[in-house]
Amino acid sequence: MSAGSQSSVFLSPSQFLAHWQGHRRVTRRVIEAFPEAEVFGYRVEPMRPFGEIALELLAMAAPTVRGVATGDWEAYASPEASTREELLRLWDEATNEIEELWPQIPAGRFQERMTAFGQYEDVGRNLFLYVIDNEIHHRGQGYVYLRALGVEPPAFWERD
Image (cartoon, rainbow, N blue to C red; front, side, top):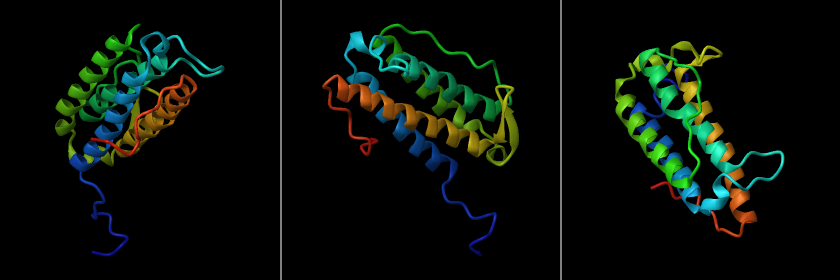
């Protein structure tokens, strides 16, 4: 197979999901590391509190998988939580939903152009890459917050 072949695959869908879920496990550990009072209460202007950031990540992750899998792009809506425990519960529920929906994605949907949430047009794989990039970016903000609070953040390379 030539280097430019369109049929060569770098990652299978299941390998891609495993990579993403590794990132999600690290982000979950960041949420866990926050002192309860600070997850929604601490901020460095102009950034939002990390709890609000995590809610944004939740509003994108499972709904993007659902949209790519089914074509049903419900309105982009942030879930509600006001405590670290509620946030972790929502995170775990989203993780389970992602695991359940991922195998339902037809293979061709990763290459298919679509419009996510009525406004973001791209192919399926790029929509997922955006969700991952956004999570990593915002997790970095969480690391800054944790360090400012005197809390050692989790190792980003430990994804198990």
